[in-house]
Length: 190
Image 1 (cartoon, one colour):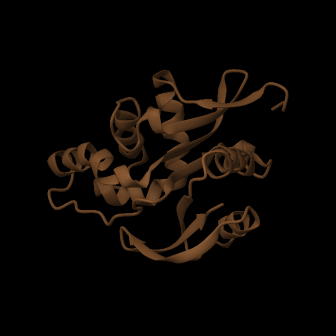
Image 2 (spheres, one colour):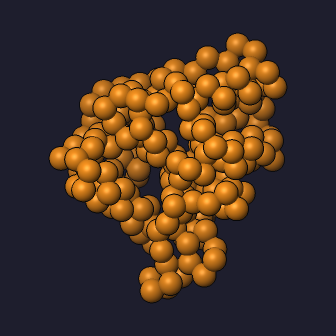
């Protein structure tokens, strides 16, 4: 990876498979819970199905990627928390029809924050600062330029992720439960 060739950009539909690989790294257990199966191929297909479509929470429209030489090294999924139910509706309907008739997930975000749903970095690129790079880009875009609040959930026992978020200025604002997991809700405001 060279910093000179690396860029952060809005995702495109043709990035969908690569984005699915990266987002699955961040939310594998959650997707397994959604689809009721610990099959990584099914989980990736589920994510890719929605990433390549418009108008849902996982859509490429709500993603950014870090790219170097045409290769996706990291991806992040972010959207306006006020639109969660609207964006989640097609996902919920699909899951209820194809996997889990009783699917009824908790609200992971709400109005008043731009929600960082998932962030994944290629395993061979982890520890090289890409997570910080994309988070700093989001902070610059949403918090500094547009005066928005950024929010995210982190598992309460994921100390490495918490350390990174705290270093970047995120503060705890409460706890949430997502698919049975205790999650710390963090925000960064101006």
